[in-house]
Every structure is written in structure tokens, then in C-alpha cells.
Amino acid sequence: MIIYFGENDPERTAKTNWLKIKYGDSKAISIHSLKRNSLSDNRSFTDRFLDKKETLVISGHGNDERFMDRSPLELYTSLMGAGLNHDRFGSIYLLGCDVGLQFNDRYIATNFMKQFALKIRQGPARKLKVYAPRGEIVWMMDDVIWEHLTFPRVAEARIQICDEDDNVLEDYSFETGMLIFK
Image (tube, rainbow, N blue to C red; front, side, top):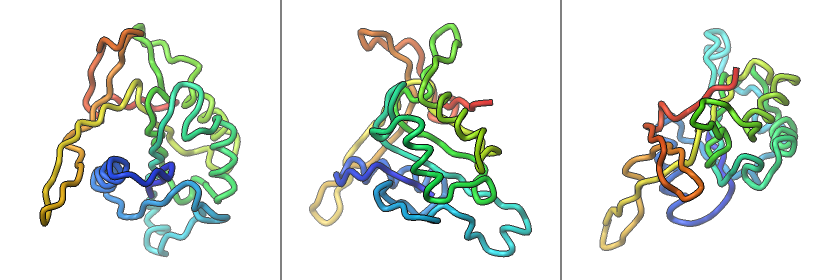
């Protein structure tokens, strides 16, 4: 399942569509649409029997302190209120710039991901693996023309660590730029 912040613009739609393909999930909802039990276990009997877990992908703007305009505790509370647990989901990806900020010396800052993951470890979703990009997500966009209309499309996404002057210090593929909180 993909949760996005709720912006209704063509670039966010393109990013969400890319994530749908990347994670093999056709369902995407706004975080503002989450209701009680939206994230509770509704897997089929077969999926439960085989212990097949879903991936929860959350995409929005972020930094090392806030993600989707929420603190780690506020996001945790929102997701718990919607029924998040480790029965349905095996992992959660927090896809926002710098939410998993890692410095060049490999020191993981006291960042959003770390604070959020510590909350997760204390509740009913404690077995979830928490991933986040170690730097900024750089979306390389191009245009697609369909029936005389032009739409943005994500050509590639990368993770970059930059200095305070926006010079790229490290550049990663989308996959290798992800950190897991252990």
C-alpha cells in the first residue's frame, strides 16, 4: 500500500505511479483519507496462511525532523490509529528527503527515521522493518505525450547526500540509497 501526503499535482501523481510500479502495488491513498482500521490485517486466508506480508510505502516531503508535516510521534499516532501492525505489513518505507539522513562518516543522525523506528519498536508493529533514504531523493523527470497532452513521468530516482552548498558528496541508486533501522 502506498500512502502519499495528498498534494494533487501532476509531478506527485507521476512519483506515486512510479512507486506503484516499483513496489508492485496498485493501491495509493492520501494520508488524510486514512480511517480507523485502514491498515489493519485484511489479507486473504491464503496470504495469512503463507504469512505473506505487504510493504507500506509512505511518500511525501521530509527532512531530518519532520515527514509529511508530522513529527515522528505524530506520524506513529496516525498510523496506529489506522490499525498499523506487523501481521499485515513486513516493512515500511519512509520516502521523504533526509528522513534517514546519514553523514559521510556513516554516522546515522538522530533523524526522523530513527525516532519513528524507536516508537514502532514499542507497539503492535514492533516487528516491522523500517527503511528510509540516507539523503535526498532526486526525481529525474521527463515528459510523455499522449493524445496531444503532456504529462510528467519519473525516468529515474536516485538518493544523494549533499553538503550545505548542495554539492553532491555521494550518489546512490534508489535501492542502495535506502537504510534499514535495526
